[in-house]
Structures are given as structure tokens and as C-alpha cells.
Length: 451
Image 1 (cartoon, rainbow, N blue to C red):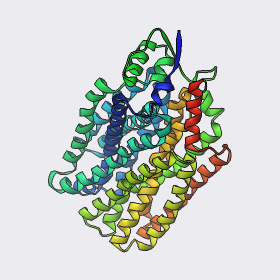
Image 2: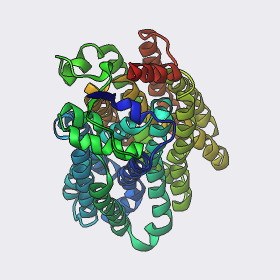
Image 3: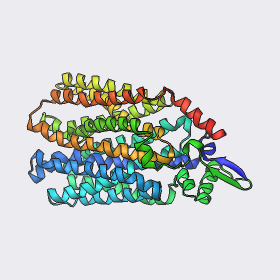
Image 4: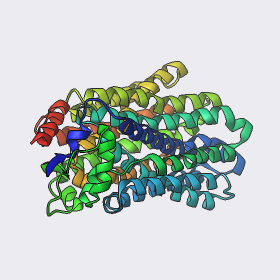
């Protein structure tokens, strides 16, 4: 019987139609996740006016989804390792789409807060798992770039929420805008059920080799000749330690630094995405102006994540993202000085988005590369879940901004501090690791597969 390692087929130079399908579906899930995550921030000014509520009263609505995201991300990793990536992705995408639609029918703060919380559970569970399955289908030499490129859908989704609000909010109202945001991922669920394949490493670990064999035959474009035994590379095979034990044991230092980096990064990211429209409106910007500038921030992340993904496959991935956080910190300081000029502020916000939002998006492929498949789902989802606590604090800190009457420039100065901490966390992570470039990592995987 011939033994074939999964990576021998996955790491082909040319992506198969099935691999492209996984990439496209991953991009679309990220897009819908970003759309439904960010849209609440864009409709917040209209919600304040229509319901005649104060900004602090709105804080629970903005933070409810973030709390749900943290819970969803943390519990989804073990569930994904037990029941499969695809099932978790389909169910959670359906969950966040349905409850986003229900948000449009909410009639009170309490009701809207509950709907946003359940929406958040789905959003938080879907993102790390779609990132994991995309990374598992991408060839090693282009894994960081393609996984990061799929993750750009998240930033594009947030930006689309801003554009949707800018053009339809005044005419349709906030309720219809958010319902539209929920209908889009609901249509995607059927496509996921029909077209998204299950993770082949998961299928092999669960001894569902017949299903894994059919997927790999589709990727290589021909059936296997004779009897074959599918195996994972030695570094990916299940040992005695559970996924949770590996993350909290062998990979604890790197995990801790990823958690700290993601925590601080999401604190800044969600403070800006959740409160920037309201902050800019308070500073005197019009509806179209604050929607446009707020949309520029995540849109810059699309460019940043794409460029970073390319460099992550050419150089040390940790170093690429580390430098991006440092440059983002410097630009936040610059934004504090140019906040009075709408044109300079717009350019600076775009560059901050390219670096900060791009780096945040690139943390998912970085963590997928860092962990082996045996604990990848747990490692990636826990980084995202613990990092979401920073997002929760970011939403609450937005309310404090108005309580202390901080100026627009002062807000940017303050946000430079957690961005610097993200840089330090990745620097400390790199200090404990043997310097290795992404090509060397890819070659190591290929070489391991060849044995």
C-alpha cells in the first residue's frame, strides 16, 4: 500500500479549482463577518437621534457583539476540532446573519443588545475557523499571502458597511440598512453547505479517509492508483497531548504574546470602527464625511494585509507584522497633529488602516502558521477570543472619550500606546523563536512531506 502525505497534494505549485473555491468562500465569509461587525458603528449616529438616547447608553449595544465574539471564538476552537471546521462555519454564519436581521426589528436598547450579543457569538466563531480552513487548503509557499488575502474580505466588509450607510442611511433609515447587512450572509449559507469542503487534516485525524481521499483526488485532478494510505506530516500528527494542552504548554509563550498583541490591536481597531463615526460627527463632520473617513480606515487594511501577506511569504512573518505596528504607532501620533485638516486626516487614517488594520488581519495567518494542525483551530480561535476582550474594552473606552471630552487629536495620541504594546508583544515573541523566514518554513513543510 502506497503512503501519501496530504501536503504532497496541497502544496502543488498551481492551485486547483477546489482550492480556489475554498479561497473565494473564505473571502466571502470574511466579507460578511466584517459587514455585520462594523455596520452597527455606522448606524450609531442615526440610532442616537431616532431613539433619543445618550452615547453612554449606546455603549452596551456596541460592546454586546464584542462580548459574544469573544465567547464564540473561545468555544469554537474545541468544537471545530471535535465536530469539524465546516459545520461550525455554516452554523455560525447562519446564526450571525439571522440575528443581524432581527436587529432591524428591535424596539428597545435591551432587545438590540441581546440580538447583537448572539450576532457576536456567530461572528466570533466563524472568523477563526474560516481562517483555519483556508490556511489548510493553501500551499505552504503562498499560505500567508493567500490566507491574508482572504482575510481582506473582513476589512472590505466593514468598508462596504460605511458605503452602504453613506448612500442609504438618510433615505432608508438604520433598520433597513442593517437588515440588508444580514440578508447577504444568509444567502451565502446555502453556498457554504453545497460547496465548502471539510478540512482534510481533520478528516484524516477522525479516520474519515474515504472523504479525505475524494477531496484530494479532486485537487490533483485524478484518482489515486491502487490502494493508498493518507497520512499527515510527522509534525502534524496527533500525539498524546490534547490541542488545549499543547497551546497552554509547548506553545504557551508564543500564544501569550499573540494574545497580548491581538488584545491591544483589537482595542484600537474596535474603538475606531465602533466610535469613529460618532466621534467625527461630534467633531463637526457631516454624515457623508464621517462615513467616508470611517470607511477609509478598514479599506486601507485591505491594501495593507495584501502587501503584508506577500512579504510574509518572503521574509519572517512575525517581523513583517511587528514593523507594521511600530509604523502605525508613529502615524497615530501624526494623526493627532493633523486632525484639524480633513484631507490630511483622511490620508493619514488610510495609512493607519493599511498598517494597523492590515496587521490585525495578518495575525490570523501568522497564528495559523505558528500552530500545527493538531492544535491550530484551538490556537487561532483562542487568540481571537482573548483578543476580543480588548475589543470589548475598546467599545467601552469610546464612551469614556465623551465623558472626559477628549479632543480628536488627544484620542489619536492615546491610541498610540496600545499600538506600541502590540509591537512589543511580537518583538518578545520573536526573541524566543529561532529566526526563520516564511520560505524556510514552507521548505521545511515540503521537505517533511517528502520523507
